[in-house]
Length: 477
Ligand code: SAM
Ligand code: SF4
Image (tube, rainbow, N blue to C red; front, side):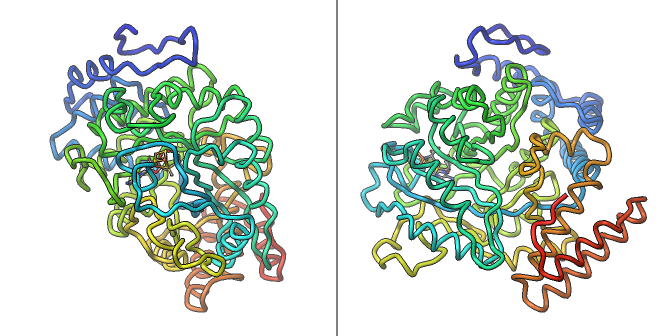
């Protein structure tokens, strides 16, 4: 591939590797972060245009503290202006930790003999999901190791099972998956089960580093993983999530990799990723890597702000790997989704059907935010956010919801804020403590006032809120 700062040519075969490490390094080595350039680039992003690799590299090379502040301020402004103050909540559910791969950073890797392997039975899945519903969860991401047991048919079965589990007013309205790469036929099978987003992380975009960390199993194949989202697209899954595991290689390179991957999907399929993830490495049983590339909190905040500006239309996910202080800080710079009440040990949401042995050492890595869902919702409310469980666009067939939020004027006021309010109202009625109910309703009425002041007719919304109070559910717009 030739170095060209402005253009991304369409590959002859989309299934070929489209990441060129020399090209990425060339951008990083040559981009000059002078004040005017940085300010122009921030403005371009505020004007709702995705940044190219050269512009992203310029932001990454800004080391002057004043410029870094401007970048963070730009990201904060973009989030406020375009996305408002909703934060979508979800929970991960680990279905099974059998794994044929040997990723040096992961507690599930095959050489970790300490790890106790377990795959939830159907009854155990039902118990877990009922416990999650009892907490108020409406959106889940199912997570699987890579193993012949976790075939497309099995994944599809678990997705259907989860959609069918209803307890009291509880139901899961969106099931996303994080699973190993499939072939096109396999993706068709999981698509038919009604998955929301198919999420997969490239871990590191640098092929050499990738070989270093992946020492066994199918995951050793960089190209098979990199092109998984192309195969997903071929199978009509256009709702996909990208990610890089931060701490395996140079973080600036990984940001460039994520942007390059985004460009590729846009150029070939005319649709960018639905979400971006940038998990930092956390301690895991038998973790076998050095901290050479670990990223401190202040660089992590920069990373989030730069990604926000680089791909302004995409949802950004921050998980409970991060501690509450980091989460509260970083959310400001562009995060749209967080998990709440997370437990990673297999079977930890409802222990009744597992024996004690299975409960031991069956987590993939350690999380740093163990707050309950209610605590997180309480704190989000204090910080001025509207917690949201909205799944409306996806269920109304409005795919590319983030893109619409971003590109359709008034979309947020018409759909996102009212739906966030309605799902928050449901949560308050069904699951919240009396203290949170008081605080939550005050927040909802404050939001209604803001909508009215913005010229939005809230009558329909108010009558729906009343219907929620009377016991009706799922009144999404
Ligand atoms: N086995 C599938 C795969 O590898 O794609 C499923 C996903 S794995 C269970 C979910 C993600 O967790 C991985 O893609 C990786 O980025 C992340 N992960 C693994 N070990 C981690 C660690 N020690 N700290 C933080 N994240 C980790
Ligand atoms: Fe297996 Fe995924 Fe862990 Fe690698 S990251 S060892 S593939 S579960």
